[in-house]
Image (cartoon, rainbow, N blue to C red; front, side):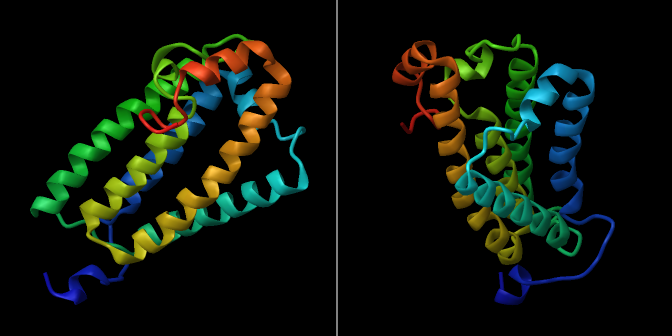
Length: 187
């Protein structure tokens, strides 16, 4: 593919916004269906100033990713599109499973069911895999340039959340943390 194919940028109805916004809609749907879990998910009362910076940057990069996706065409009919779709389907199923496990866990308990048995941060992991899948399906350097900083900043968000979980859930979370990798196979 010529380099121009990787940097195309124009608004279109069959652009990368479709899968990108699907990830956001799933979050909103679960927050509506599981109100208590949704309240827990957006509680930032414990944030330090560093946590607030990471959360703000994460919000900015997610917004940038969504905005850029409006102008990046999907490569429908190409092998990259097929690979991206398969990877996105995997991410979508994992993302929904992670939200369901989180939202259905009672308040005050460490989330350890479902995909949380395999990863301490499956929601973030699957969201990022979904974002990378969209990059592949669209063969877009623009989206990749928005996704990479999001992944890096999200790691900072995760470290803050893990600190909070240690403080809130104590020994229960420490045992969970000792036996469960942060990102599936990666501690």
